[in-house]
Image (cartoon, rainbow, N blue to C red; front, side, top):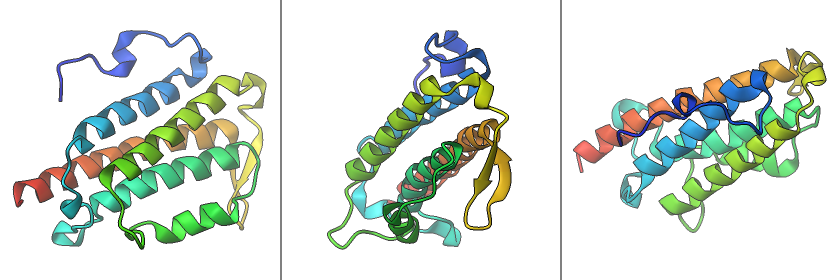
Length: 170
């Protein structure tokens, strides 16, 4: 990784309300790290599962899909058929074969959409109830947004380790 300061160390991002700053910083940091680690990543390593761990391809799909799902629930919306199709596809290559750039671009797009939603989030709604999934498990807007950031960073870390392992054997 470069010697650049992490996003949270660069100061506030004025377009986000104070309470949502850590979420924005985590998503921006995740994007920077994914873009750096996936730069020139060999496509033939995308679906390798060392020690039966999740593949880099899975993490890239899951990062995008989970972020989309959490932010959908935060808007009090139900998942679409397309979102369910993407969920089912997680961990699988497409019929025509994904390129690393395809999955990287998909993640970048999802981060952009999430950041826009963060900018538009009314602070008064952060405590509002939100049901998750078909069972409508209880959460709140802030709970979903925070978990989206935490979950994203957890998978970024897992992706980075898996990528390093499969590249070391390449």
